[in-house]
Length: 259
Image (cartoon, rainbow, N blue to C red):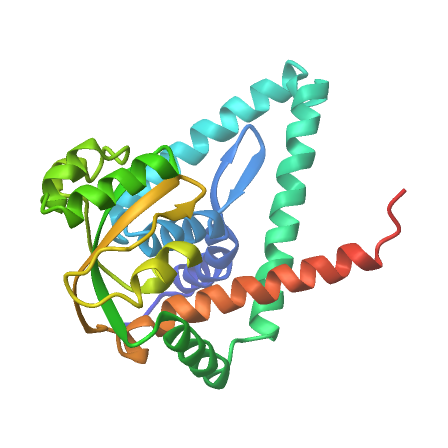
């Protein structure tokens, strides 16, 4: 198939014009909406798991952007962009966008290393400990009440039955059961109250915390179940990245002249 001269000229003109046309999604009252906005919107929705790239999705986004541009033009026409509260909101939004981009670039330029992740993992593992404890407790308002409960247990009363009077309403009905946990999951003074107990033993004296006075019973112990490094690597990396960002922010604030 061959083009006639006139048809060939028209084809060349169409090809030359196509890239410029493709740059705009639409032109609303003379104001162009770049096609790149659709690409970015689709990218964000797909990344968030809120849709798949398709003709239908792109058409829906196009309609939304055209409608938004129409309303924006009308709002500006009516002077809404000059209102103090709107200008303040725009300033806040602009600041957030710029600062968020700074944060993303900082994290990109200062990536968390595998060595840092491994060190944090080992630190957390050491703090957590290698043993889990199955603990029960009875929470009371006063030391005298707690001592009275301990005396009753020594006299043969069942711990689980006495737990019904616990101020901890979440565990009172289950015999004071706190389930399996590591000592690091509890306040230090509470953990110190049961880590030295033998299986089945009850604290000899009440354990005081900010919540009141506890009578604690140790049901059993077992080796701690700790996730493999690869399982928690993404979470550790994210936490360390946020820490680096927080440290950077703190340094910048300290350097700033604030009056």
